[in-house]
Amino acid sequence: MALLEVRDLHKRFGGLRAVDGVDLVVEAGERRAVIGPNGAGKTTLFNLITGHYRPDAGTVLFDGRDITGAPTHEVARAGIGRAFQITSIFPGLTVHENVQLGIIARQGESRRMVGRAEGLHADEVTAVLEDVGLSPLARETAGNLSHGDQRALELAISVAMEPKLLLLDEPTAGMAPAETRRTMELVRRIADERELTVLFCEHDMEVVFGTADRVLVMHQGRPLVDGTPDEVRTHPEVRRVYLGEEEL
Amino acid sequence: MMRRPTLPSLAWAVAALAALLAPLVANERQVFLLMSILVLAVFSTSFNVLLGYTGLVSFAHAAYYGVGAYTVALVALHLGWSPLLGFVLAPVTTALVAYASGLIALRATRLYFALLTLALGQLLFLIAFQWRSMTRGDDGIHGIVLPPALASTTPRYYFILGAAALALTVLAVVMRSPFGQTLRAIRENRERTGFLGVKVKRYELASFTIGGTFAGYAGGMYAIYNRQAFPELMHWTTSAEPIFVTLIGGLSSFAGPTVGAVVFGLLRDVITRNLEYWQAVLGVVLLLIILFLPGGLVEGVKRIGQLVLGGRGTPPPTAASTSSPSGPADRDAETTGTTGGA
Image 1 (cartoon, rainbow over the protein chains, first blue to last red):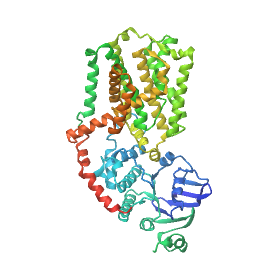
Image 2: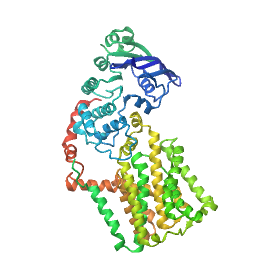
Image 3: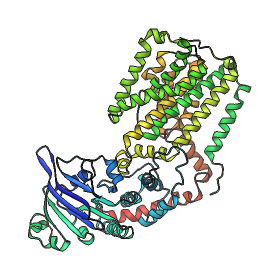
Image 4: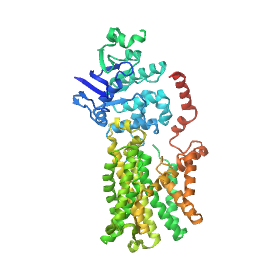
């Protein structure tokens, strides 16, 4: 059974059809990518899946449950972890505390008013930080980290929640080629080790082809092609609307 | 892990000892000053649950303070109950009022939330001000009769001290719990906290209710030590007091509002006895602190302490190694080297 099933999703903003009839199926264990030029509707699609926006029409089924338009915290509890296009961490807390929050929330301990938070799940936090290569910075204030390290931290927070599906919105946005490569290696390795299902969007084609099992190409809010990286790479429509400007 | 006494716990112990011994050396006026400082410390710490921990700015806080004070005064006036019973009831009635008004105020966020709290607080103020048959209006209720055991100053002082210690302990436990940590997460990044699966509004309401409850508790303390309640206590301008106090002491630490209350209380006492323009001096002090010590006095003392002790005395030794200048700086250099054009 598919882990995530998006059926005929629509969202308009005024006259703009931001997402216009998108279908998307993500199988458990799959690494799935959504690509398209800027303004193709990738981020809107993600925001519809995670309940940030309510779709005008269509359904989002996750793990057999209808989560269409459900509030963010319910989507998260259902098992969707998300990393944002614009880095979203807890800047004033330490790196350690950032990851710890993910674990506390997962364990349903957020409402506990007695007992110290300090030191809670320390071993697991250390393990996650080691995984993403941030353990030397554990005591550092998260806001002081470099851009690349903050992205890694954001990934670590989401991983700590042990989501069934990890949603990454342009994980390499604003990164130089070397950093992009390192980040995607990290994503692949974490996904393998923790057997995560990953859905991510990108506009950088190379990033996608190296990582994704299947790719959905979007153009002006509509799905254009859905297939393996090779199928997408050679598809004439894709070459016309998307790859035209980039020589492959 | 081995627990050594940390600097903050040592400071708390010294402060507690000083507070316990104070009546031996202080005169009556000074003991009253200390009681006002203790009340202000609880009031401001309860406010900092909202401001410092959750990132909520509320102008209704004085209204809850007043509800607490009026609970003591009204049950004494109309029902003839002991003010001590009123003191026990004060946080209960305030919790209900804070929860109900929080439900309304939290329909909005940020500025509109602050404006709603202003409106709700003023509404509560007006009830106290206008409902003469119940509250005696702006005359206020004065001369609450305390039980004989609390009639003289010294036992009353120890009662207030005990009440403050209890409130601060409870708040400290709650704020360092996973719940308190979740509130800090909301302060840092509301949206991200939602994506952790936390229902943010519910936690904000809990924070608002806890803060309000302890403001009412502080109001109850006020009604006991000063034996009165009057509408001005509830006016929105009274809400500014814990803001000043918290800014002076520092909103990023639990001790900040208490340190701020001591400094604010002593300063106000010294200045108003010698000078007419207390507000002007307060303004200058706040300006200097915000400009030169944005973290407040506690943060300033911490920084000085780190300079003097060379980083020892703060968390475990591993912290010193990562926060040494070479660690993160090296990493920055490494990553900025590759980020270049981005």
